[in-house]
Image (cartoon, rainbow, N blue to C red; front, side, top):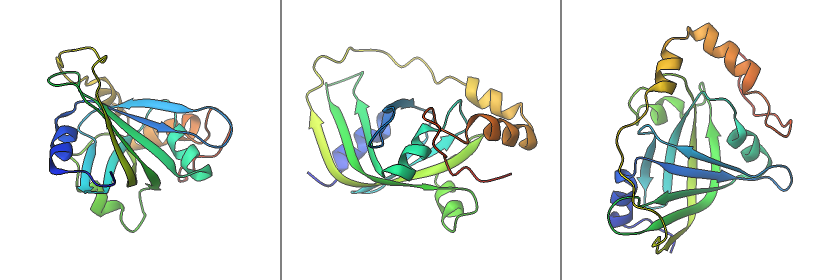
Length: 177
């Protein structure tokens, strides 16, 4: 299947967490959990997620080497379901022509660093019957609190020190301050 049906779009909107997987031809594979109301379905074959400053920037480095990305959603409540979106992604940095339009799709998140746009080539579902049932208690505010406590200069300095290269030493194309 190539397109996200309205039911799958509703499933995505209801999920408090999703997982991002990227890999280059060599080096480490990266799988990262994401939350914070940071994903939008832009259409039946396109999604975007707002990426905030964190301890690494593996996704950006991997996409420079290979644009492959997989997003995975799991039903931890309700009927079992696993949904994977496979495709090619691109990174949109502040200052890019479509940055403002993409950023406007999201509620403001402190430390917003880049937006990833995934062109979905394959939509795959599986049963998810072995995924445990868990209750979503609340979103964590720790990352937002940390970013809010930083000045723009401190956030920039942190990114320059921690987000310019991947674990494998590859550049992330993080803009200069």
